[in-house]
Image 1 (tube, helix red, strand yellow):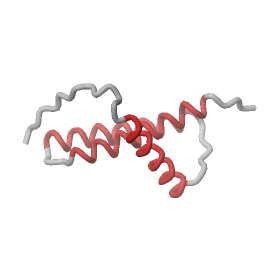
Image 2 (cartoon, helix red, strand yellow; image 1 turned 90 degrees about the vertical axis):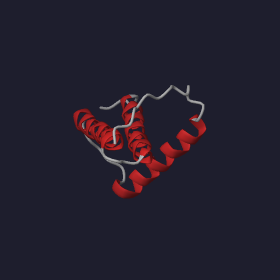
Image 3 (spheres, helix red, strand yellow; image 1 turned 30 degrees about the vertical axis):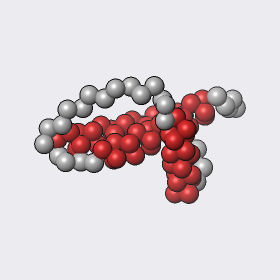
Image 4 (cartoon, helix red, strand yellow; image 1 turned 180 degrees about the horizontal axis):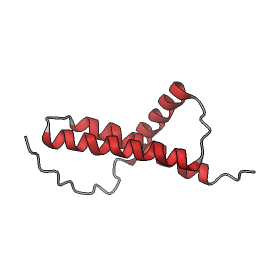
Length: 94
């Protein structure tokens, strides 16, 4: 099945829900891996991997009967990690 993927920007009207999903994903990651200390390059590699998983979810949805919910789950993982990278970039390291 070839689904058309043209989605209209919702202007973040569901932001409170998204923030809850991001917080839950953060808690899940912390429970799974704890506090991680990596180089900026390693964090970028992890983020790139997550973006690849999002691309795969979109492709699966469009071409192979994948579930739309999987796109949301992968996008939340991308956003969570990207926010962590943004937060870590604010820290002063010695």
